[in-house]
Image 1 (cartoon, rainbow, N blue to C red):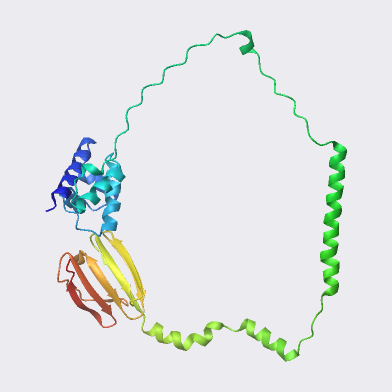
Image 2: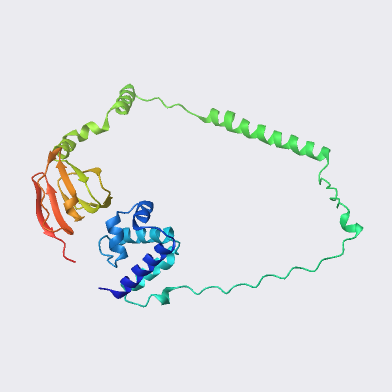
Length: 277
């Protein structure tokens, strides 16, 4: 076992006990399954993918009053088998309290209310009137040139009647109608997979070797995913899941209780293999 990860886990437990919180209270607050939290506090950080584990570490640190950045740095160094303490930032020295300024003698001059200097506007009323009139003339001239001159140069081209009819018909044609034949073939082979979890689990799904997505399943949750012909799935805690393919139950007996790789096609689940580290 990695002793550095064990050391980090002991620091987390100590911080939790100092704020007088139980594992159950922390698990509820950070929305984490309690059995996973207890694994983390025992020094086992291998039960989830690193992206989810770091998110829970960050929330755990905030919950018990630790710096989330320092905890994540310690976790990184523990994985690299480097001493944890070197990752801590240097503490700032306590600043000496500022000395109060010496009191000043208050005189009558300090009690007088200062008078703001009168602002003088740089333009006279006559100058503003002339500038406004000039601006109106410029706007009127621009409108005249844009509306009347450009309208005089416009020429309406006569188009054949048949060409106009074809253009109108084209506007109301459904472009998807031409693709119905190809789309129908895809839809007939499409797969709808319903996944239900009775305990915490995580899934990584490859859709037709084109798109990859990851999901974290909480207890008593259900998701629907669709693809064309094939799902390739990596599952953590596979015994917590049940599957419906196009609303029909699938027979699923995982070969490992931790992580497995399965392939789901229209024929069902096959190629069940344990995921070797």
